[in-house]
Length: 262
Length: 289
Figure 1 (spheres, each protein chain N blue to C red):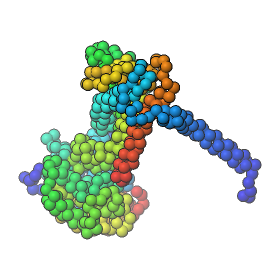
Figure 2 (figure 1 turned 180 degrees about the vertical axis):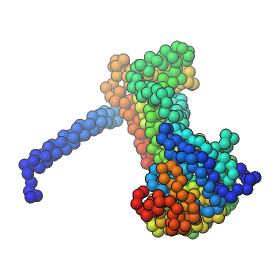
Figure 3 (figure 1 turned 30 degrees about the vertical axis):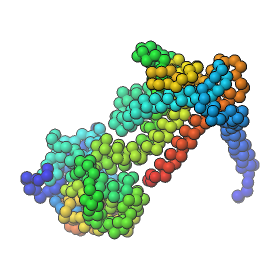
Figure 4 (figure 1 turned 45 degrees about the vertical axis):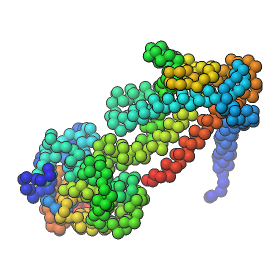
């Protein structure tokens, strides 16, 4: 999927996506179209399937052996569930950021270069200069360079949570992903750090398609251009964020946004 | 309304009594260790000399040194580790990082636990049957070390698996989500962060192996053989068996001699433990999460 032949305006497109955990159905006929290069947020009460949907895009749901999926998910016009798809390539092109920052217990520099080492350089050691360039570029991109440039050799796990989360985003960039999936990336952070990460997301939009799951309604409103509201494994409403928060089309959306449940 | 009641007083008395009781138990537990060490040092200490460590036993093992036994023990332990450590670590890696929870893996786990519970004399008999006779290694270092290796395998596996599982799962998840294979994850993240625990398990294992007598008695260790082994197909003396021999099989042994041998053996074991603890502390200081 290096050069998508069929130009598509959607970065992610699911068709009739159904997903079961054992006998429990978590997603029902989900048709979702995520536009390329923008930030799309997914909101909905706990257990509505938003994380499941997010995780099925880069196929990490299937690591739990008892998950069954039907329908299709296309990323950049290619079906990620097609038999010829190499899962390692999927993980490379679709980065994922988690609720709890999970930097690896190695140095900051090694964290940033980790995925690049896995994919781009085929295990071969990069020349130091080239490596340092990649590290600097990624860290600058996530607005982290200035605060860590003097301690690149330090343990990444000693950074503050905000820095850790930025680092977790930075380490995805050197392999040039198309899509960044974020599963409540700010819920472990304090308000100031949340603001910083949201700023970063705005900074990254355009170059990456960002799909973000959040429990924080204000965050969805502030930090996304389109918003998807899910309920009981189905998409209720999907539209322009500002519009949806002002004039939701469905009663359920209105109730959720007003905080009547969730 | 906040006055002390009779019930409070009674509970306090019970509590104090229990505390004292447990404390006494703890002291009683430590006492034998201190007595053994004290006796060995006091009675065996004067035996220790450079000559004692480097000379052959003479005069029906009643005089001279313990050099062949010391070297033999090092041979036996080294060869046993060369066999058990790679197999044990590979098995632990498979069980912890690759295997799914099926009846097969559960059966293997059960087998490992049971293997750990088999008495050493039974291992000895197995060693004779399997390695000495069936594989025709004869009584040799190879047969004895194989027997020791089988005996120590469960401990290596369990220690390794425990240190692997002490590495937080989220690190593995992070790696997998970047497209790392299981092996890349193991090599770059899991092993570097569990190696201290694995080594500790291995070194503690060494100390246990060094003291074993029964498994080597029939498989490769000789009572008296004042030559150094030239290959793994030779027999050898060993400290543990030497101690057994001069304590029970040989007459007219000077009273202090067994204490000297025991002191060397326990010194070897303690030194290894000290190294393992020091090493672990050093490695632990380097990892942070």
